[in-house]
Each structure stands twice: as structure tokens, then as C-alpha cells.
Image 1 (cartoon, rainbow, N blue to C red):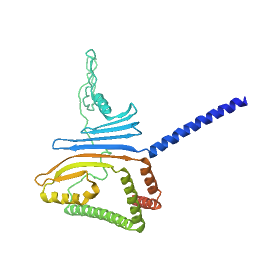
Image 2 (cartoon, one colour; image 1 turned 30 degrees about the vertical axis):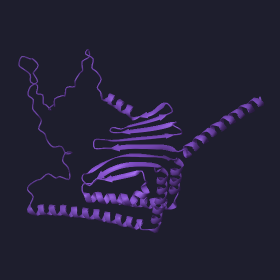
Image 3 (cartoon, helix red, strand yellow; image 1 turned 120 degrees about the horizontal axis):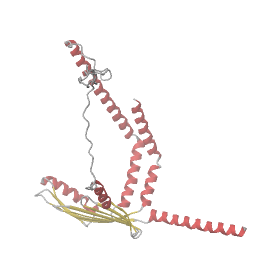
Image 4 (tube, rainbow, N blue to C red; image 1 turned 120 degrees about the vertical axis):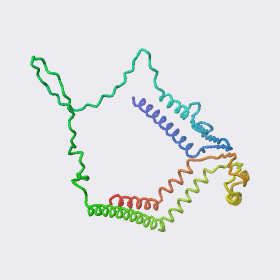
Amino acid sequence: MLDIVLNLLSILGIVLLVLLGVVFVVLLLVLFFPFTYRVKGQKDAEEMSIQVKAHWLFGLLRVHFAYPDPGKLTVKALFFKVFDSGEMDRKGDDSKIAPDKSPGKTVRQDIPKEETVPREEITREKDDGEQADRTEVKPQEEYPKEADISPEEPVATGKKSFHDKISAKYVKIKYTILKIYDRIKDVWENISFYQKLLTEENTRELFKHACFRVGKILKGIRPRKLKADVIFGAASPDTTGYLYGVYCMLSPKLGKDIHVIPDFAQAIFEGRLYAAGHITVIQVLLHGIVLLLDKRLRIFLRRLKKHGASKNKQ
């Protein structure tokens, strides 16, 4: 009996170890195996089209997005379709179509009831003993209820004097001025608080650290291949020249596969784009966790929360 129990426990232990190993391998693949993406775009005088394709683990997971409008997003795992925005749109359109009405069934329409007027029914007895008809219908006089009379709007008993009108205008203007003053005071206090907070040494160091981490993330997800052929022109030749000058200054860093041709005669923007690269989850996750664990960020968020709570109490 003891041998059977030990054998069962050993089998369960092996199964658990295998499951843990599978989970560990999947976790490593998700963190370190890159997501590969490709972007293709084209813009001409008539239309614009964009296609985005991404896949992971040699095509085990595939994502495809196509534009123009309305756009279509498809997600597939192996041979199975996980998500399709086109099918969802078709289902939504089918649900809007009214069901067919069979000829044998009649549709009953609700007839709105006429407004009833309160009535006083006066019964009269005739001389011959017959039951009197229900006769005269008198609409009740409508009197204002107590609930309909607002305490803020007293019933006027007579014409207001000139002095009362001037006093009412003065009170209204005074209230408006005080309200504007309070609003300006709140805005000024907020400006002073944020100016003081942003100029502190702790905040400046936090921003430098955040810019460094965000730069690392952008560097990790930037396209490894980038090709573009662009023809552009602004509304005026001067603006076109300024923009082309900016491109000439940045062209050494953009690469040799990006070609921009200015058009000084008309306002135009046409071209083709191709970009490809990969993203690893570990890069984004690592820099994000390091930034979130920064003590200066917690102090910054705590001060913002405290300031917001104080303003709400006021």
C-alpha cells in the first residue's frame, strides 16, 4: 500500500514539474522572443492606405491591420481566428435590421390615450323615476400647488421700485465679480503650486530619469529598416523651404533610404513608406519597472494627490 502511495506522489510530482517547466518556458518566450512588425503605407492625391503586420514565435500569433476606412483588425493563433473586427461590424449591422413581419400576424399599435380632464359628475333624478344621465362636465380650475411655487421666486405683489431694481442689479454684479475673483485666485494658486513643484531639484532629476528611460524604450522599438519617398509642398514657398531645411539637418540621422523632394509650386503631400522592426517585452517591462520604483516619482505623485485633496475640501 505504501509503495502505491509513493508511486502516485512521484507521478504527481513529475506532472507538476513538467507544468512548471512549461510555464517557465512560455514566460521566457514572452519576455525575450521579439514581436516582429512591418508597416506599409501609401498616400496619393486620391486615397491613403496603411497595412500593419505583426507576428510572434514564427507565426504562432499573427496580427494584421488594414486601412482605409473603416479599417480591419484580425488576430490569429495558428489556424484559428481569435479576433476579427470585420465580423463584429457585420453582426452589428445584422442586429439593426428589423425582423420580418408574417402576414398572418397583426401588429397592435399603441394608441396614445387622450388627456383626461378632471370632471364633476352631477346626477339628477327625473320625475318618472329613471336614472339620471351623467351630465355637465366642468373642468376644474387650475390652481398653483404649493410645491410648484419656488421659494427663490416669491410671488410678485406689485411693481418693484427703482431702488429695488438698482439693489438687485448691484447684488448680481457683486456676486459675479466675487465669483470671477475666486476663479482667478484658484487658477493663480494652481499656477504657483505647479511652478514651485516643477522647479524643484527633485522634480528636475525625476524628469531627466523619465526622459532617459523613455528614450531607451523608444530606441528598443524603433524600426530597424525605414524607407520613404515623399513629395511635399506647403501653402507658401517660404514654409516649404523652412521645412526642407529642417529635413536637411536631420537627414544624416534618418538614413540613406529616406528621400524627400520639395514642391514649391503647390500644396501637396504624397509618398510611400516602409518600416520594419521588432519589440521585446523585457525591454519595455524592465525600464518601466525601474521608473515606477523610483522614490522621486512616488513623492511627486503623493504631492499631486495631496494638492488635489486640499482643493476638493475647499
